[in-house]
Length: 274
Ligand SMILES: Nc1ncnc2c1ncn2[C@@H]1O[C@H](COP(=O)(O)OP(=O)(O)O)[C@@H](O)[C@H]1O
Ligand SMILES: [Mg+2]
Image (cartoon, rainbow, N blue to C red):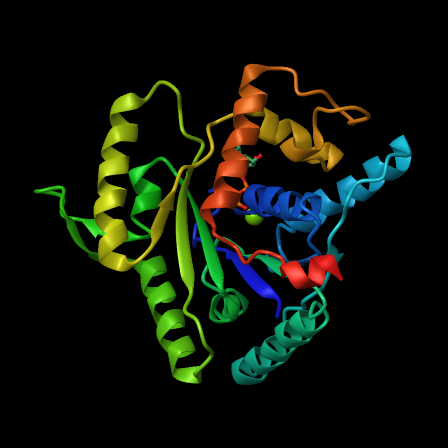
């Protein structure tokens, strides 16, 4: 069975594509077979990231691990129902094409689209990166402006709730594990960081997600995109780039820590021995 990991948040710029790419490479480098689906058909950041990787690998003559890419098409037929139907089939086909993979990583757009909703129904694990801002927090829950307390769930958490419910009704065993991770954590804005942390911990239990330690705000994430590289490709003999600063080393630890926190299924030992 392919374990489906969905990167979702109805908000652009929270780090979905960057995290998707790092998860893909982390899993590939641990010897797993990985499929990738880019559902952000407008920005196509994950697709571009992977294209850059392919090109960089060719130019430098250095083999870099790559996922199996499966394409999905949006539909813009006059009939909305027919469009939805086509998209449903397109995603199903894309996932069928990845059946031989251990993992399928689906990167969603930062908006509520039919394809993004569908992807959440297929998810075994949802990863939601969140910028350290109360504007991003608002996607998960509304805060009472007077008391600052959580007043109720918001757009995105309601969407995950619906996906969980619908999935339970289909009788597919196992629920959806939802992990929220903070992204672009600043080293200086300590007060905001602490406040967000407290609110998120409070919310985690109430709406049913696990909170993972996130990523710091580091220029390296932006610099690696044009080469299609991730922090997991750096350092070591023959690496295309060196891990040059303490910040890079810490960033790599943050990624390893996220992968560990996801608690993903491990390879079957009997299979490995065969
Ligand atoms: N931890 C980080 N530190 C610095 N820049 C980051 C970090 N995570 C993402 N970015 C940058 O923020 C922007 C948005 O990230 P992206 O992964 O494209 O978000 P999304 O897919 O949610 O829209 C990109 O320019 C990306 O390079
Ligand atoms: Mg994106």
